[in-house]
Length: 190
Image 1: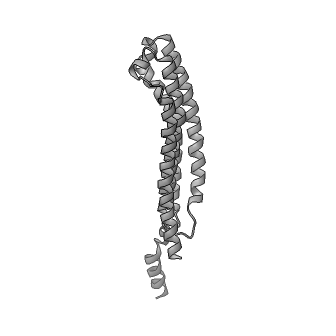
Image 2: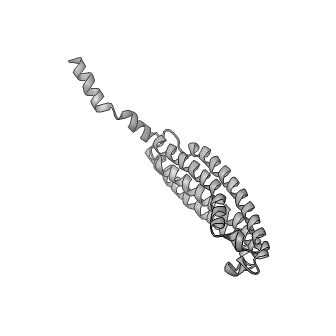
Image 3: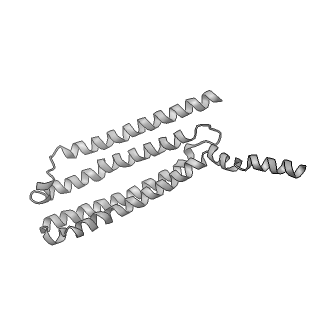
């Protein structure tokens, strides 16, 4: 009889470890941490992708010298941006653990909020810094060639940092609204 009762308990409780894993937030946090690592690695690969595309398009064969020099400068900027983006995503991956408290019932909202904030910060900084520097190189060296394909008005150098700042602010606002909603829900329940 006791064996039957023990089997009955195991039959109805074998999912408890999995459910506990979901309830305490690890189920949400760990895949997102891996997603952050994937984003970090993709950022490292982006300059290589750009270089391969330029080689496949025979850019170095047909472009004039100053355009090739401009491309090299842009490639260096992209490499620096890729390294900074890698470090940024890895830093945010480590901070993701802090976004969920073990006793909170609402655990998905803080993780999604953190992702929203991180994507917005990354994209805003990329537009504001990397975009501005690349636009400057195109403007300086692109009178003929790249500049005729991608005309860069002088106002771009002022607008890209503003756009980047606005993206960071808006992403942060949305993320904080999510976190506020989760905090209100968690505190109301307590």
